[in-house]
Image (cartoon, rainbow, N blue to C red):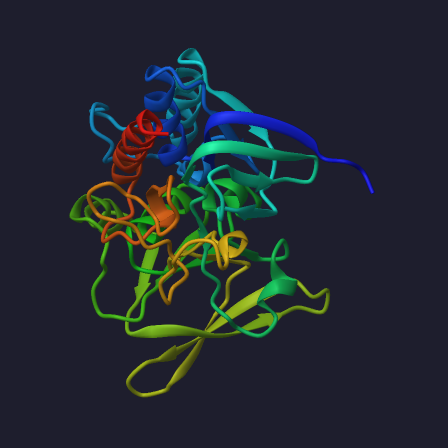
Length: 313
């Protein structure tokens, strides 16, 4: 068995999305030279946003990856060390907080959990097999594969509507499937959507099943009216799922208190978790609003709380 490398640090941040990078900026400015662990690309879900329209300071909006890149550079300027590694498990039982990856065990005095969330699946039979063959959870990643074809977006929030607007520029027709008779997205997103002539909203409907062609690729989405049960098949080559997210907290089981949805329970003032010296920020925690700006705010607050904790270490 390979012996794990041992790394000690004052503040360890799990996740390099807007919450984690914001925490890194504040921890770095406080002189703690934080270590940031990120399993994917810095920016997290932020990197998949085609056009971010509601982040303060950018009058015309900007691409998510641009903000992610800027946050990364800013964190590194203040001394943050960003490492590419997935966290396997943690042990928060002692004064030293132990965080394990495949190659290392990190010994930290304080930890900020900012591991974000991942897209929620529809739970329809065959969904997993169709990922990469017509089903996607990222319009900006996969939209180009469906240029000139018909697609559907399932969901009614900001992400779903933003995805539909983006896809409408590439695809022949876009169906927006929503279980209610009105969208939950911000008015600005809705105005942009309703101005498009190649978008059709399928109201009061849920995704019921997939249809495939002889090669096993997606050929249609069957939707069901929530009131009448009547079914209709949308002849689409792609389905983009945007029905919310699930917190990335599997590795935290038994270490901090989680709610029924798997989100980390925090003190609303300090963002402290049930483990001493451990704080949580962004989409991974219990919060009434999951937006880039609130994640960045959380990161700053969590880092400040971690800094105050370090003063009494």
